[in-house]
Length: 126
Length: 91
Length: 100
Image (tube, rainbow over all chains, first blue to last red; front, side):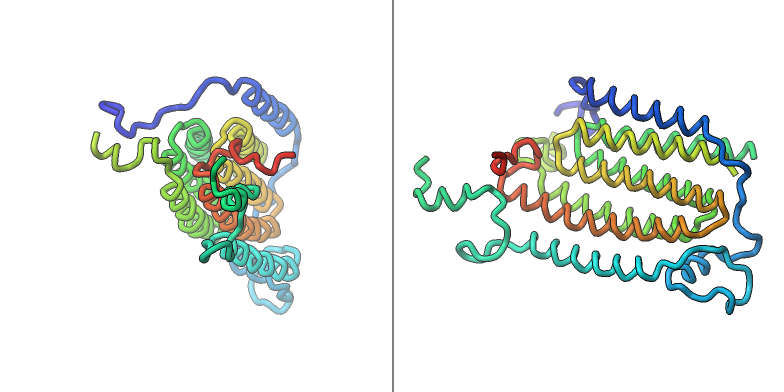
């Protein structure tokens, strides 16, 4: 570590097959995409507030009663509630995983395949 | 139109380059920094696509939340035998 | 605007870089970052077509994708820290005690 310091170094070599797989996937995707035609771009309606339209779409607001131009969209309030539940579950999972072992074998996840319990039972002589 | 295409090409180059850096660089810490560059350039793409709100959310959620979490993890799981921050500073 | 095909190719490139990272690296943190790259590729696609068809559904959906990605990272960091605590390493090929 004399002159190299913390200069970034590339980790290359030994990845020929996965690299070729990824490049082949990209080649297929690019060939398909470049040959596809989507017609003319529509673009957003002139003068419409995009952020407000996102808000209307997220909570299923009836855009007929809203003044001003609105970009059309579908309703997302069910997805919103589902994501809220998923986020709740995620924070519970994160807290559960991050919990340390309190004392002997309380709380936390023993994700070592029972190695720690085995060592403790055998007195750690293996 | 031409300016738009040039800007797109420039930032696409930044995005692809830093994404390649994320997966090719040896040190995880450098990967995290390059991931930040990639996420920020994706936010620039959002601005070019008239999605300013999403660009702001990208910066707030990804760079401000996800990247900070990843940085914490990188610092917490650094191996003892690897070139830790202290050794780099000593050298 | 720039043709939609360009954005498709860009997001395909980011996605394939993420796949490459998943296939080649053994560090669990690199896995997490590669998954982030792939989710970003999907988001770029959604936002590009949102503008292309003048419909804001894609942008709303990519907001939900961002929330999901944040939740995924929170759980992933917890799993990686447990992995590090039990194996003193984050190499995903080391954790084989559940292999039959």
